[in-house]
Length: 334
Ligand code: TK8
Image 1: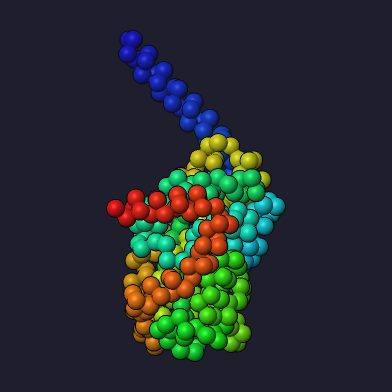
Image 2 (image 1 turned 120 degrees about the vertical axis):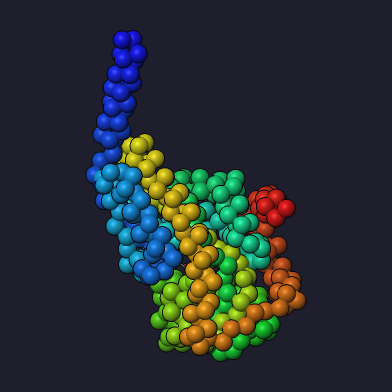
């Protein structure tokens, strides 16, 4: 009899807890914006996130995804999050450096050697501390997705050495370090939001750009850029963000579910990105892009050339932070 009561009591309390949790999750519609199109790795991961969230919230937390910068460029969405006009987004860390300068560490060139090293730093103390810094600015940082190692495309010539960048108008992300790096390498760097990039390439407002293979494929840059040069000059991440103004109105249970779905999207996206990268290379070749890879010697030369920019920004970002970064990379490398 005693055990029976105990079982009954346990069942009862579980049910009560379940009901309480369910009551803590209200029907909500979350607008989630991103910059690439729906067929991109970003689009697939956004849909995964929406489906996962709907599933684990029993259909209560509904997410509507908006690709192709339909809610605005990365910068515009960041501002909308701060103001509370939009709930969530994914975008590059590069333009976030205007808000929290320390995000600039990911724009320092030739840092990571592999995706594994990037994962370790992003999911480790440094990456997580940076996310926390966003809160004071009105943004909640949730997880990092892979954008990936960036390579150069242009409409003029193959880049075999830094000197080949002379006279090339190269679009870069809106970020001081990116600007400094590419001007120092010899290009005429033009900062511009991604949402304006295809048209700018098509109309020859700029001659080239740099992005990971996956983006060059999904955004069909091969239609307007005959040359692709594999440089892997920088690994830049994407980051999933929420409006703090909005986040603070959620119950702890709702916040937990969103964090859980975000973590699931991170794992899905990284895997998908890595598989897609290999496939995308084939698609670019098939579409007639002329592809070359810079030699390790030339990478070393480029690295040397941009060292003054790295030194300058190491001072600005904080030498301790850059040291921590290099230490965490070393740890992951060993
Ligand atoms: C998409 C951008 C893009 C980035 C860029 O909104 O701007 O070149 O690589 O992925 O965040």
